[in-house]
Image (cartoon, rainbow, N blue to C red; front, side):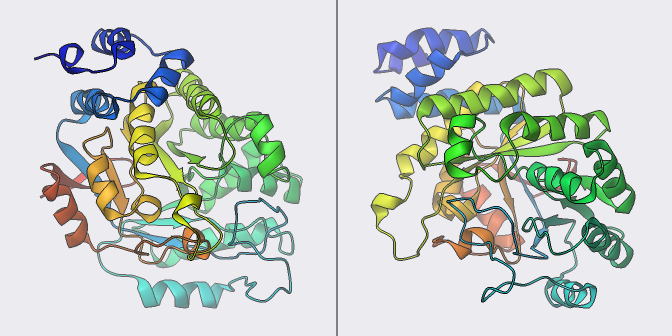
Length: 366
C-alpha cells in the first residue's frame, strides 16, 4: 500500500510524489508539511527518506561537553547560561581547572570533546587557543569539536584577525570540527529580536563556508520554539541547504527545542511532542543533501529521541557526561547517558546502534 493511498491529507499527495521522485521541496511544500493534520504520514515519509540514506542504522558517540567559561558579552534573550564579569556564578577555567574538570569526568572510550562557552571579552584569543592545545596535549587521541560560528566571529573581533586566520590557528591548536551552535534562526528579523549582539545570518553562514573551504566538516543547529514563524524555520533550513549545495561541508542538523528559563515553567512554555516530531521530520524532508538529522535528547527527552528515529532521525547524539547550557535553563532531561543506555534506546526502536566518531566513521556496530 502506498503512502499516497494511506495519507488522510490530500494536500500531501503532490509532496509525496516529489519525495519519491527525488525532487527538492520548496518553502511552500514545507509549510504544507508543518500545517498538515496528518503527522503520521509526514513522519512516515521522513522515515522512508532516512532509511534510503542510512538504512536502519542509528548513530551515537562517546563524548564529553566542556564549557570553559560562561562570561559573555552577548545578551541573547533565550540564554540562562551566560554571566557578566563579576556576577555570581561567573567563571573562567584556568588551565589547571580545565584539566581537573576533564580528568574527573573522563572515561575510556570518549572520542570527542565538544567545547562551547561564552563570548568572554575579559580574556584574549590566546586563552581560547590554549584551551584547545592543552586538551590536545593531554588527550591527543580525542577529536576536538570546538566553538560555534558565533564564537569564531567574536574571536575575529577580539583578536583583529580575519575569520580564516582564526580558523587556521584553531586548527593548528587541535580543532578538527566546529559545533553547530549560534545559528538560532537564520533570519535577520529573528536575530535582531532575540540575539542582536551576536553574529548575523550571513556571517554565521560565512564562517562555515570558510571552514568548509579549509577542509573542515562542521555541524549545524536550529533553535525552535520561541518567536519564529514556521516560514522562518523553513528559510533557516533552505539557507543551510543552499550552503550545503555549495560546499558539502555539513554533517548533520540538530534541531534544538528551546528550553524555558525555569524548570518550574508551565508545559505551555515548552515545545510540544507533536512539534518536536514534526520538526525532525520536516528537517529530514527539506534537507535532502544532509546526511543526518539528530534527535537531541537533552532538549526533547530520551523517549521522544527514541521515537524520532521513526520520524527521520539517524543520530541520538552521545554520552555527553555533563551538559550545562540547556540545564542552566529549564531542561528536565538527563544531563548524560551511558553507552549502554544509548544502545538500549536504539535497539528499542528496532534500529541498529552504531558507535561513531565525530565524522560518522563507524567504530562499532551493536
